Image (tube, rainbow, N blue to C red):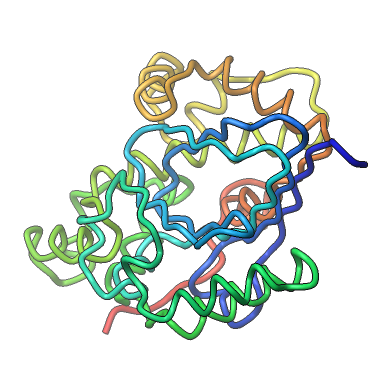
Length: 281
Protein backbone atom coordinates (compact mmCIF):
# COMPACT_ATOMS: atom_id res chain seq x y z
CA UNK A 1 0.00 0.00 0.00
CA UNK A 2 1.10 3.56 -0.70
CA UNK A 3 2.99 5.14 2.17
CA UNK A 4 3.88 1.82 3.83
CA UNK A 5 7.30 0.23 4.17
CA UNK A 6 8.14 -3.27 3.01
CA UNK A 7 11.12 -5.62 2.98
CA UNK A 8 11.51 -8.74 0.84
CA UNK A 9 14.60 -10.89 1.23
CA UNK A 10 15.51 -14.01 -0.72
CA UNK A 11 18.41 -16.22 -1.73
CA UNK A 12 20.69 -14.82 -4.45
CA UNK A 13 20.71 -15.89 -8.10
CA UNK A 14 22.54 -19.21 -8.69
CA UNK A 15 25.51 -17.38 -10.26
CA UNK A 16 25.98 -15.52 -6.97
CA UNK A 17 25.51 -18.42 -4.57
CA UNK A 18 29.23 -18.69 -3.82
CA UNK A 19 29.54 -14.96 -3.18
CA UNK A 20 26.32 -13.72 -1.54
CA UNK A 21 24.10 -15.17 1.16
CA UNK A 22 20.99 -13.06 0.51
CA UNK A 23 19.55 -10.25 -1.60
CA UNK A 24 16.70 -7.90 -0.84
CA UNK A 25 14.33 -5.16 -1.95
CA UNK A 26 13.29 -2.60 0.65
CA UNK A 27 10.71 0.13 0.21
CA UNK A 28 10.50 2.98 2.71
CA UNK A 29 7.23 4.75 3.47
CA UNK A 30 6.43 8.39 4.08
CA UNK A 31 9.11 8.91 6.72
CA UNK A 32 12.89 8.49 6.50
CA UNK A 33 14.15 5.26 8.04
CA UNK A 34 17.25 4.93 10.23
CA UNK A 35 18.40 1.44 9.28
CA UNK A 36 20.61 -0.38 11.76
CA UNK A 37 23.38 -2.67 10.51
CA UNK A 38 25.18 -5.13 12.79
CA UNK A 39 28.38 -7.13 12.16
CA UNK A 40 27.89 -10.37 10.24
CA UNK A 41 31.37 -11.11 8.90
CA UNK A 42 30.67 -10.07 5.32
CA UNK A 43 29.96 -6.81 3.52
CA UNK A 44 26.91 -5.34 1.78
CA UNK A 45 26.34 -3.77 -1.60
CA UNK A 46 23.23 -1.62 -1.70
CA UNK A 47 21.67 1.05 -3.87
CA UNK A 48 18.90 3.55 -3.24
CA UNK A 49 17.39 3.61 -6.72
CA UNK A 50 18.13 6.91 -8.37
CA UNK A 51 21.58 7.07 -6.80
CA UNK A 52 24.85 5.18 -7.14
CA UNK A 53 25.47 1.83 -5.38
CA UNK A 54 27.47 1.89 -2.17
CA UNK A 55 29.52 -0.67 -0.32
CA UNK A 56 29.24 -1.09 3.44
CA UNK A 57 32.46 -2.79 4.48
CA UNK A 58 32.83 -5.42 7.22
CA UNK A 59 31.53 -4.05 10.51
CA UNK A 60 33.04 -4.46 13.95
CA UNK A 61 30.17 -2.67 15.70
CA UNK A 62 26.64 -1.57 14.84
CA UNK A 63 25.94 1.49 12.74
CA UNK A 64 22.97 3.35 11.30
CA UNK A 65 22.33 4.63 7.79
CA UNK A 66 19.32 6.73 6.78
CA UNK A 67 17.10 5.72 3.88
CA UNK A 68 15.08 8.67 2.52
CA UNK A 69 11.31 8.73 2.63
CA UNK A 70 9.85 7.03 -0.42
CA UNK A 71 13.19 5.40 -1.23
CA UNK A 72 13.57 1.92 -2.71
CA UNK A 73 16.72 -0.03 -1.93
CA UNK A 74 18.12 -3.08 -3.68
CA UNK A 75 21.01 -4.83 -2.03
CA UNK A 76 22.91 -7.98 -1.20
CA UNK A 77 24.87 -9.44 1.69
CA UNK A 78 28.27 -10.80 0.70
CA UNK A 79 29.63 -13.91 2.37
CA UNK A 80 32.68 -13.62 4.65
CA UNK A 81 35.85 -13.84 2.58
CA UNK A 82 34.38 -12.54 -0.69
CA UNK A 83 35.10 -8.84 -0.34
CA UNK A 84 38.85 -8.80 -1.06
CA UNK A 85 38.41 -10.54 -4.42
CA UNK A 86 35.41 -8.44 -5.36
CA UNK A 87 37.05 -5.04 -4.93
CA UNK A 88 40.62 -6.06 -5.81
CA UNK A 89 42.14 -4.64 -2.63
CA UNK A 90 42.73 -5.82 0.95
CA UNK A 91 39.39 -6.05 2.74
CA UNK A 92 40.86 -4.66 5.97
CA UNK A 93 41.10 -1.26 4.27
CA UNK A 94 37.29 -1.19 4.11
CA UNK A 95 36.44 -2.20 7.69
CA UNK A 96 33.65 -0.01 9.13
CA UNK A 97 33.65 2.08 5.92
CA UNK A 98 30.69 3.17 3.79
CA UNK A 99 32.17 3.67 0.32
CA UNK A 100 30.69 5.05 -2.90
CA UNK A 101 30.82 2.31 -5.48
CA UNK A 102 32.28 4.71 -8.02
CA UNK A 103 35.44 4.75 -5.88
CA UNK A 104 35.82 0.99 -6.36
CA UNK A 105 34.49 0.07 -9.80
CA UNK A 106 35.27 2.12 -12.91
CA UNK A 107 32.20 1.00 -14.88
CA UNK A 108 29.71 1.81 -12.13
CA UNK A 109 28.31 4.93 -13.81
CA UNK A 110 26.66 2.75 -16.44
CA UNK A 111 25.29 0.41 -13.76
CA UNK A 112 23.79 3.37 -11.88
CA UNK A 113 21.85 4.30 -15.02
CA UNK A 114 20.78 0.70 -15.57
CA UNK A 115 19.43 0.42 -12.05
CA UNK A 116 17.68 3.78 -12.17
CA UNK A 117 16.04 2.97 -15.50
CA UNK A 118 14.87 -0.51 -14.51
CA UNK A 119 11.16 -1.11 -15.02
CA UNK A 120 10.77 -2.62 -11.53
CA UNK A 121 12.90 -3.00 -8.38
CA UNK A 122 13.13 -6.72 -9.15
CA UNK A 123 14.74 -5.96 -12.51
CA UNK A 124 17.11 -3.51 -10.79
CA UNK A 125 18.10 -6.19 -8.27
CA UNK A 126 18.73 -8.70 -11.07
CA UNK A 127 21.01 -6.19 -12.80
CA UNK A 128 22.91 -5.54 -9.58
CA UNK A 129 23.40 -9.27 -9.09
CA UNK A 130 24.66 -9.68 -12.64
CA UNK A 131 27.20 -6.89 -12.13
CA UNK A 132 28.56 -8.38 -8.90
CA UNK A 133 28.69 -11.88 -10.39
CA UNK A 134 30.86 -10.58 -13.24
CA UNK A 135 33.10 -8.54 -10.93
CA UNK A 136 33.67 -11.16 -8.23
CA UNK A 137 36.61 -13.54 -8.18
CA UNK A 138 36.75 -16.91 -6.46
CA UNK A 139 37.35 -16.50 -2.70
CA UNK A 140 40.61 -17.62 -1.14
CA UNK A 141 39.90 -21.35 -0.58
CA UNK A 142 42.00 -21.47 2.57
CA UNK A 143 40.08 -18.56 4.11
CA UNK A 144 36.84 -20.16 2.96
CA UNK A 145 37.73 -23.29 4.92
CA UNK A 146 38.72 -21.19 7.93
CA UNK A 147 35.33 -19.48 7.85
CA UNK A 148 33.58 -22.85 7.80
CA UNK A 149 35.56 -23.99 10.84
CA UNK A 150 34.72 -20.82 12.75
CA UNK A 151 30.95 -21.16 12.34
CA UNK A 152 29.19 -21.30 15.74
CA UNK A 153 27.90 -24.84 15.35
CA UNK A 154 31.38 -26.19 14.63
CA UNK A 155 32.55 -25.79 18.22
CA UNK A 156 36.21 -25.24 17.40
CA UNK A 157 38.41 -22.27 18.18
CA UNK A 158 41.08 -20.34 16.37
CA UNK A 159 44.05 -22.03 18.06
CA UNK A 160 43.73 -25.24 16.02
CA UNK A 161 43.28 -23.54 12.65
CA UNK A 162 46.95 -23.11 11.62
CA UNK A 163 47.67 -26.82 12.07
CA UNK A 164 44.36 -27.81 10.48
CA UNK A 165 45.03 -25.67 7.42
CA UNK A 166 48.81 -26.31 7.30
CA UNK A 167 49.69 -22.64 7.54
CA UNK A 168 51.39 -20.42 10.12
CA UNK A 169 49.28 -18.32 12.45
CA UNK A 170 50.78 -15.17 10.97
CA UNK A 171 50.00 -16.16 7.39
CA UNK A 172 46.46 -17.19 8.31
CA UNK A 173 45.85 -13.85 9.98
CA UNK A 174 47.24 -11.98 6.97
CA UNK A 175 45.13 -13.90 4.44
CA UNK A 176 42.03 -13.65 6.60
CA UNK A 177 42.38 -9.89 6.97
CA UNK A 178 42.97 -9.50 3.22
CA UNK A 179 39.89 -11.54 2.27
CA UNK A 180 37.48 -10.91 5.16
CA UNK A 181 38.71 -7.65 6.69
CA UNK A 182 39.33 -8.96 10.21
CA UNK A 183 41.51 -11.67 11.76
CA UNK A 184 40.29 -15.14 12.77
CA UNK A 185 39.59 -14.27 16.41
CA UNK A 186 37.45 -11.24 15.57
CA UNK A 187 35.69 -13.20 12.83
CA UNK A 188 34.86 -15.98 15.26
CA UNK A 189 33.30 -13.46 17.66
CA UNK A 190 31.18 -12.01 14.88
CA UNK A 191 30.04 -15.40 13.54
CA UNK A 192 29.16 -16.56 17.05
CA UNK A 193 27.09 -13.42 17.49
CA UNK A 194 25.40 -14.08 14.15
CA UNK A 195 24.61 -17.57 15.39
CA UNK A 196 22.66 -15.98 18.22
CA UNK A 197 20.97 -13.53 15.83
CA UNK A 198 19.92 -16.46 13.63
CA UNK A 199 18.47 -18.23 16.66
CA UNK A 200 16.50 -15.10 17.58
CA UNK A 201 15.20 -14.60 14.03
CA UNK A 202 14.18 -18.23 13.69
CA UNK A 203 12.33 -18.03 17.01
CA UNK A 204 10.52 -14.84 15.99
CA UNK A 205 9.63 -16.28 12.59
CA UNK A 206 8.19 -19.39 14.23
CA UNK A 207 6.12 -17.29 16.61
CA UNK A 208 7.73 -18.71 19.76
CA UNK A 209 6.14 -17.36 22.93
CA UNK A 210 9.21 -17.83 25.15
CA UNK A 211 12.93 -17.19 24.72
CA UNK A 212 15.60 -19.34 26.33
CA UNK A 213 18.42 -16.80 26.21
CA UNK A 214 20.64 -18.78 28.57
CA UNK A 215 20.19 -21.95 26.52
CA UNK A 216 20.75 -20.15 23.23
CA UNK A 217 23.93 -18.57 24.60
CA UNK A 218 25.50 -21.95 25.35
CA UNK A 219 24.13 -23.41 22.12
CA UNK A 220 26.03 -20.92 19.95
CA UNK A 221 29.27 -21.12 21.92
CA UNK A 222 29.14 -18.51 24.69
CA UNK A 223 30.25 -19.47 28.18
CA UNK A 224 26.98 -18.29 29.68
CA UNK A 225 24.30 -15.63 29.33
CA UNK A 226 26.53 -12.95 30.88
CA UNK A 227 29.13 -13.61 28.18
CA UNK A 228 26.41 -13.29 25.52
CA UNK A 229 25.22 -10.02 27.04
CA UNK A 230 28.72 -8.49 26.94
CA UNK A 231 29.22 -9.47 23.31
CA UNK A 232 25.77 -8.21 22.28
CA UNK A 233 26.51 -4.82 23.81
CA UNK A 234 29.90 -4.71 22.12
CA UNK A 235 28.74 -5.75 18.64
CA UNK A 236 25.16 -4.48 18.51
CA UNK A 237 24.88 -1.85 21.23
CA UNK A 238 21.96 -3.68 22.84
CA UNK A 239 21.25 -6.45 25.33
CA UNK A 240 20.05 -9.87 24.10
CA UNK A 241 16.57 -9.10 25.39
CA UNK A 242 16.51 -5.78 23.57
CA UNK A 243 17.61 -7.46 20.35
CA UNK A 244 14.87 -10.06 20.71
CA UNK A 245 12.26 -7.34 21.23
CA UNK A 246 13.54 -5.27 18.30
CA UNK A 247 13.59 -8.18 15.87
CA UNK A 248 10.17 -9.23 17.08
CA UNK A 249 8.71 -5.77 16.49
CA UNK A 250 10.27 -5.51 13.01
CA UNK A 251 9.15 -8.93 11.85
CA UNK A 252 5.55 -8.48 12.91
CA UNK A 253 5.34 -6.18 9.88
CA UNK A 254 5.85 -9.20 7.64
CA UNK A 255 9.63 -8.95 7.18
CA UNK A 256 11.07 -12.36 6.36
CA UNK A 257 14.79 -12.75 7.11
CA UNK A 258 14.94 -16.48 6.42
CA UNK A 259 17.46 -16.06 3.59
CA UNK A 260 19.90 -14.59 6.13
CA UNK A 261 19.39 -16.89 9.07
CA UNK A 262 18.65 -20.24 7.41
CA UNK A 263 22.29 -20.61 6.19
CA UNK A 264 23.24 -20.57 9.89
CA UNK A 265 20.84 -23.40 10.76
CA UNK A 266 22.04 -26.98 10.85
CA UNK A 267 19.86 -29.12 8.60
CA UNK A 268 19.70 -32.20 10.80
CA UNK A 269 18.25 -30.48 13.84
CA UNK A 270 17.02 -27.08 12.67
CA UNK A 271 20.00 -25.23 14.04
CA UNK A 272 23.36 -24.11 12.71
CA UNK A 273 24.52 -25.05 9.23
CA UNK A 274 26.98 -23.78 6.61
CA UNK A 275 25.75 -24.16 3.04
CA UNK A 276 29.02 -24.79 1.26
CA UNK A 277 32.43 -26.29 1.88
CA UNK A 278 35.68 -25.90 -0.02
CA UNK A 279 38.99 -27.66 0.36
CA UNK A 280 42.11 -25.50 0.74
CA UNK A 281 44.44 -25.43 -2.28
